[in-house]
Length: 329
Image 1 (spheres, rainbow, N blue to C red):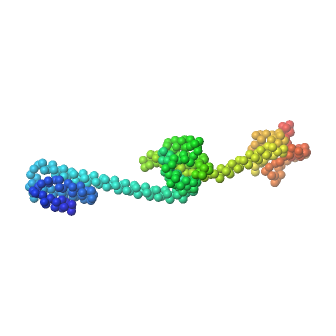
Image 2: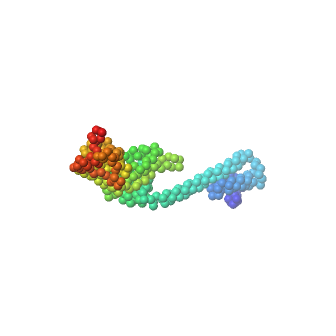
């Protein structure tokens, strides 16, 4: 309302009063809609239109219009005010929507940071070009690079050339909307040392569902791999030692089933390991005493049996039957 009054005040110096009847009101219409919003803009448009009819058009002091062409000017003035109100109202809503979306995005980033930063697992974000976009503190600890050093680098800078090839296959699955769970691979630390990791990769989508990147969660399994390698070497050493000794050795589990057997035991018993694997050693190799009574296993039998090639023939006849003796029965 004040702007409508101000528009009329600005027309006081004009001589005659009917000079420029429309152009002096237009800036106030636009300014009102820009500063005050949709409804005040419409109110100001209506007031300025009535002022124009009453004070600026012949006959002055009446809402009658002498010149019919002036009606066209009034219609343009009214349309200008209405369209300006609608336009600036939509712009204001868009600004509010953007501000709300930005606020929500900031909240999500804070929530995401609260989840990601304390995690013991390295969490890395990358875009569709494979460029690192996020890098949590655990990734800094695991790989030795700070977030500032890693962000903006291609994800392949952590990989050797041969391992970088596997990344292409992983990316192809991600861009197809698939996830990759717990695949084991190797990465390079900043100091050049290898780190074995178990990695899960998932696509990152925008609000429309379009894939815009990927998130990687890496868990350090280096110590686990070292333990596996130590165990493998121990087993290989034990197997080599057992194969080389001159004593027959069979091992059984708690149910009496054969779990391993060295070549000396195969030669002693006449059974191969593949024939005895998973069978009860007592039922296959123990039959009867010399007087014909059944030979049950001792109540506190050890889970392993050590059969020496140099054992006496009486011991063998009493405790164990070779395959040839069994087949002759």
